[in-house]
Length: 376
Image (cartoon, rainbow, N blue to C red; front, side, top):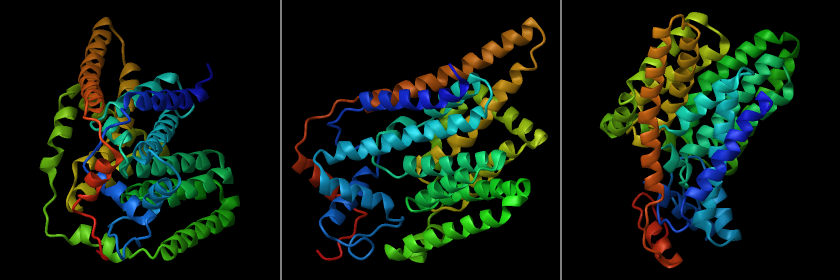
């Protein structure tokens, strides 16, 4: 099989797996799923977002769910299918980025690490914002990286389109912006003959985002600034399960450290872009109020990248049988905790719940405290 088809095959396999695994009659998956579905339901009934239905995020995802409520039945399950498709795109973008035209091992190892990351499976089957925004952002980074390598303007257009989608799904897409801008600057330096066209396309991107924000009447400051000013300390205790899952695989930590060291030493544009992303997420974890547990998924991207890089680089240093034995032990001690975490997530998704009518389902959704019903 050609190397270039492996990311698409992995993504399609994961999509089939998550669709089959998730029961259609689950009431709620994830703490904010009811909130997101309630927004979609109210918008479909004519209530105005931000005026009558409050949210502190951009409007795109809410309006997609509203269209589903208007156009079809079994909306809850179909809303989750939308998230599963985004998860498939995330697997494709990340595996393509990690593979970088090299061996199949890069894609396989990278996908294994990211798909076994804490809470990846439940969030991939939940109608929440994290998977769509990370998928669009990662696609933007991947296509911008391709644009930097090959100078094709269609890759730049794709990258900016996905970045626009990400900005209109959730504000945390800004975490990928420094990484994206770094690759854009490098592309500008590598393809100076296209510099004017690149600037024009980027100008159109800014204009498109401003247009989207004005059309949907998004109150930027009232939705964004409170996250940085709220009198709430960063809730790192909510990340304890994530840190426990990561630290349980000390070998993955060692491989990640090795990968970061190798990235800083080699200083390729791809490696430096992930270093920038990792640093940005660490700053975000310190500033944002509060830091919810599902934000840990953002850490999974650089950890999976550097873990893969460390595993591949360590393999090139093998010289003796003892080195090979040590490498095998480290790989095994990396894979087992990740597999056990993956198994626990599968058990959570397949957990049996009592059958519920659509009326009960909507009543549960409407009890979410964060939605403000301005006209009731």
